[in-house]
Length: 474
Image 1 (cartoon, rainbow, N blue to C red):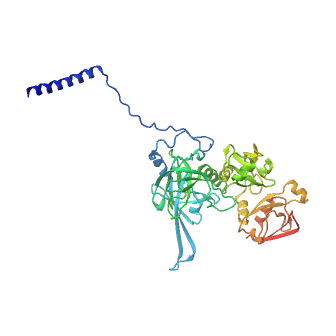
Image 2: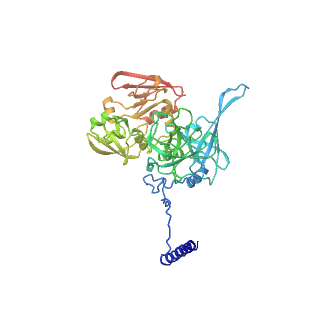
Image 3: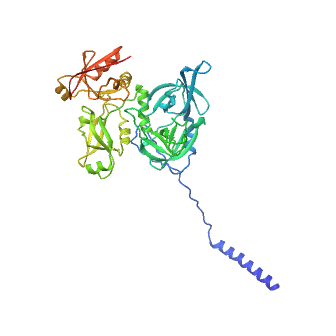
């Protein structure tokens, strides 16, 4: 027994001695635990969309700071519609709808979707801090489903515009809105695709080049903010694709760079000043790419060039494949429409295209719907849209062939007043109410001041005789 005790004490003493010797000769070591370095940010001028941001939006995946900065600037919008009919109790029937909006300036300008407020009479806005305001409509643009409204206030929280061109597939984004009237709801997802067209907007000028995300968006989110993890506005949530009526993983937002241009026009002019390239276009398919000699199935195929348009003046031709606008690749038709949609009549853009297998470029001066470079007034724009056609002045060559001045009808909107007259595109208006017409401006000025019915007189180049079309202007 004594032998075991002696051995145990000897073992313990040996261990203690070894520890003492180790600590004497071995210096203490510092253990460093490395964590993700916070992303660095650069200043970004929202008016300069050419700048690329430097922050890494997907690292770290911490949405707290962005959420806290965005929520105060996202509002709830309620519209009240009073129909002309009566309810069961003999009173006027009243309906209401709700959506979201984003404050974009400290003095109360708010961007939202056109479909959120288009049928509304009274528009109420509730801020994140519960304050309530009545809003006035500054302007709407159904072709992009955007609207600008305003509330009376100063020092309001607002969001800065980000650069939607710099978004990348797989990047983290946040959707902020008021689904089901739940205040300031934040959801996260990634950018699933860019330049998406889902064929939901109507009209000849529609622009569908949506940012697709899988951030949860539900009824009531329309008009709300899509932001990056730096808290910058990079889109306005607009639509979802669903079979159940609820979120199923596919939501779509209007890109911020397009929103910025539309909203600026609505604020400055009351309407969107749409720059028109002057070409009819289609997607490039495999067969076309093979015939043209393209290495990839990308670009926008020109099927026709409007005479006298900016594209015609710059030398673009049928069969050209547009691959870029101002250095930005346009692989699809929606991408090209979005790029051109950012500019006004009179702006010059650089168009890159393929012709006969060779890459070329041209400077194109964009024109308005009347085929001029001036900015249209809201009244002239409304006349053109209300009647339902697009017009342009005759070219010098057309005047020479016809030995006459006039205005040419480029296209006619389906279901419009002009279509109901049975007029066809290509009609050349030479007289209105028996007065000679030399330009689109002259024609529109006469229609503005007319009452009752208007009579248009003119010719078709390929058909003999004169033709007459009458329509009401009241």
